[in-house]
Image (cartoon, rainbow over all chains, first blue to last red; front, side, top):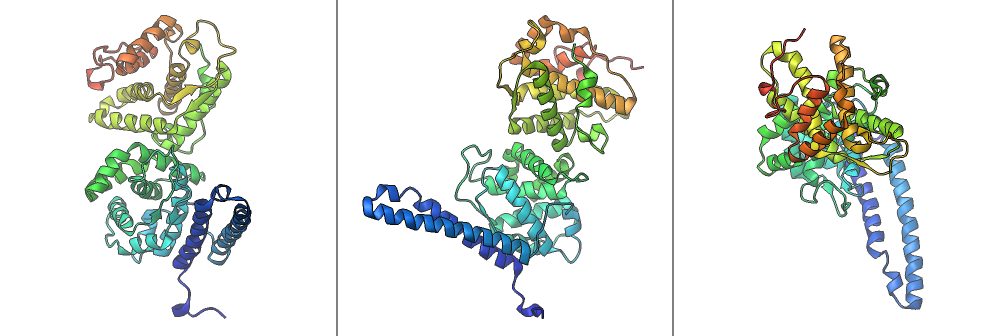
Length: 231
Length: 196
């Protein structure tokens, strides 16, 4: 027997909670890494054993979360999802939030922030708050600003070789995801297209950051319109 | 001289016209990587590509095209022939290539040995241009002998070091055109010629 809709768990929030747990465990392991060797002999031995157990637990949780998220909630793979289709009246915020999450993970990895925590429900909430159903580039501009307000990414560690700074990373990442979703995709190499959208955004990051800083929706819209065909 | 047909054959496939594909970063990047790898094999070098610099090159080229694109449709073909010289200017300005392995099988005193990165960048622009011209106008591109003249390469490198616009002029020379050396990267300042 299925769960009645009013009692059905909120998939995006549940996924976020599980991913949050995995993130917190990984962070915890990283934080205490190296500490045991600084302790005197009996204490260091106990600490090392505890740390090993923690590592095992973190790995188990990691596997469990990945398995639950993919098998119970269904897997979303990169594909032909287009913002133009998702923004149709009625708004497919669930679909958007899942695609947003999967695309964002690749973008963040390209930007040297693969360990960042991405909130799928923040993506869904932002999408639901955009009322404009005008041209796709206007919609994307409004959604980009709304997404940043919802703070969908938590970054604790940024690779030293990252092409973006910690301050501008969320802007570059959000713009990259939406640019990819607006782009013309006929072939099947979607990951390559996400990389291209990220590289394109990175090359334009000064102008894009300026538009985000001043909340210049018109300028953001122009950038989306100008570059979506060039991903 | 290099084998232009061989270089064209190594361009990645696309289901779009090349003039469109060349203005999409994912194809542009794949094509540049494939070209650098092939040149590396032929020249005995290994090239490393800086992805961010390559993306900046691409964006710079798009901006130049947008700024200079003529409103007049009759100038379309001439601009089409001019645009790759702007691509070379951006590649020389950003230079996304770096050699990581010393040459083993190069002809001594060749342009490829003299400036491997510049050589790869120039032949990339020529390759994409020749393939596009063939597809759009069924025209076979003729390369001037200047491509094998070491003194021209020496002058190209020296001058482009001072002003990257010189790269655009060099490219036009390679295609047998006379550039306006005072403003080689300016389409409106080009010398008019009668196209047949």
